[in-house]
Image (cartoon, rainbow, N blue to C red; front, side, top):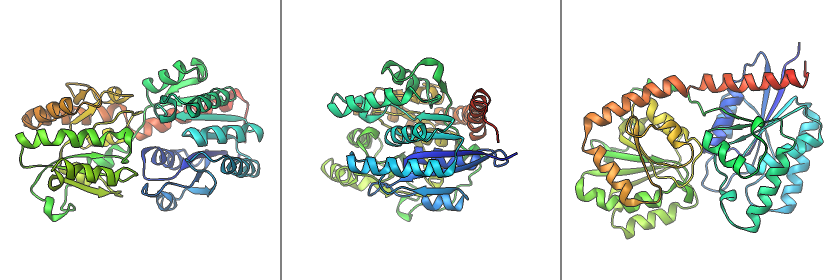
Length: 386
């Protein structure tokens, strides 16, 4: 019996959570049952790359230059043609898409190529769908259209599924919530070493990890920092990641006179040494799906202070594994961080509870198992055999 051929399509293979999720799927699906490839396009400057990681993990990939985040009708047509030809040549049984651009073009190409099974994963509230604009209206129409020939839709949180359904995208029976999963042991069993820059050794550290874009709310965190420094003059804030707003955020730190207490690292291959050094992980986001960085921090026994947005509350239990605050409020953020910095026993208690919760509910193996179960249900329904 031959293997089921699966193509995962994502807009760009950069150092963000969704591309890593895609690589985790590609590497995690049972290799005796599935032959999996990943197709992706061009990333934006400052986003880093996961192409080398894919090669190191033995994942077969395909690069489509024209597949990019920017709206460009010529590039869209070129990308569609390239994806369609790849699918026709690859004779795939399953095409599984991620992110709006790849999701629309990939599902259209898969439909035209006659792929038996088409899936899409929503990783959160699409930024473009949260706007009131002509572009948002066109994208919503495209999402609704693509859902008509999508056999199954995976949402990474209940909030994400509810948002898409409320927007008229697909129907409830198409949806299944499958939470993001992580390799818990990779984080839980990390032995803290001396990998941090020397100037941060023996300092009191808190930190945020993510792409430096507006939705991540790092500007809100910087505005909260002066108040925190009044109460904790030895505190240092570490910001891990890169993106289009880095220069703006660095300038903001200067304007707030906190530049000496903020450390921008850029993109990092391994965040574990930093998480191990943080007293608290901070997530001041304006929008989220189900952020894996929260799961990673919890796996390392770190409490979380986060905005109560998206699926964050489905991972962080307020008052048990962390504190949830209203988004875009520097005062609320500073108050929650300050209270936790003053209470070491509570940090330890929440960290332990968070670690237990991740081990119980957010393991990578469980995520892969549920996804394979969904694949197998569809294969049986469509009578696809190899």
